[in-house]
Length: 149
Length: 175
Image (cartoon, rainbow over all chains, first blue to last red; front, side, top):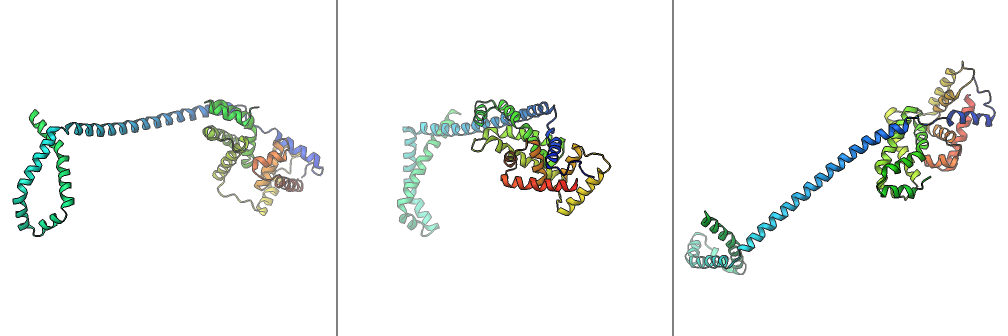
């Protein structure tokens, strides 16, 4: 079996052209594509909405966290008044007063501790004072809360 | 006909659907042809063509215009067609002996017909090795332009001509 004109290249070309030239998408291609696109568009919109909501929630959480941290810091700074400074000085004085007997007792309990403290006094005492001054506002707030109760 | 820049401007101004409509109008038949050249099945090719345009629609905002729009769309179409082909026929054997056997059976199947019609001729083309099949299909679908076929298949024009020549010879031998 053969094409009647298969030996003739021009005719064979024409037959191949006829076989493929008519191939095209069906008439409802655009309508189907539009429908598919609408579905995709809806999904795309829903996804973008979901993403936007998540981002907004994340931003809100961050803002709330930072705001609460800043509020806390401001509240502590407000408590740094002459009253709290007084509390801190009082703590230092009390500490100094009890330090002598406490050091003697500690020396008996842990020999060598006193020497170690003396050797590292440049670090230990400022650190201790810093902690005490730092704790003073918290203690002052606690005292106020107790007074309020 | 809108240029690539025009399409990009439409997308940038928030008219992605209109931009896609332009792309579809300009490249619908070519994308369908490209998919058909892989799959040789009208319904499957249409399905792939639709999928390609959906992908184009999704990716249009990222199109930067560095390559021609058609080149970009053809690349998407080739990938989608290959995926469809792999899903349809996970193990395709296109050895010469197998093809020859298929061609013989296809010829025999049409032996009783007085004349091979277009559908029968397409069936014969279907039995050619993939690249020859693609070149023949696209060449005769796309107004016989070697350059256009080369652009669609991302092949040098010389390769297209060689494949076409071999395919024609083979088809003449079996008809």
